Length: 137
Image (cartoon, rainbow, N blue to C red; front, side, top):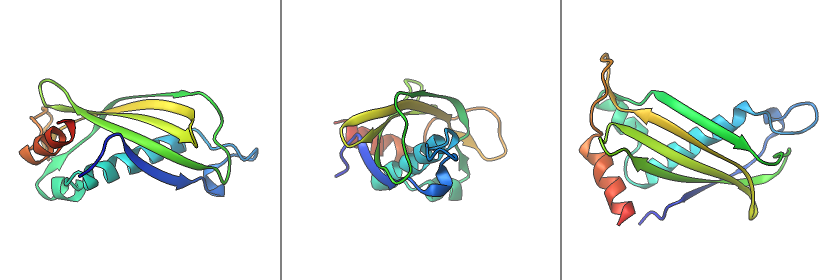
């Protein structure tokens, strides 16, 4: 059984840093995406299965609050908590980036479910609803 918040660990690579060896801000979004896809995979819903069934998940909102600098070679943990909207057409993942127990950043990403080639949101597939229901019980 998957426990949420889901935890994803990552060692900050040199290529993810600026010349002062501080993690460059855009990489936080990469870490969020990696954590989100792994959280859903571990819950039984790999992104590939959604893509194979013609479902896309464009980002419609995101935000990050940077609290402290993440540095080169730090080991961080990205905690991810996914939630479906009441309409079940949007998936919001809330994130916290930790270095040990110290909170370095918090953020969120909201995506909507679309049928490939269409522009109107659709309800989440039953596989997603079931997986998120199991983890919220």
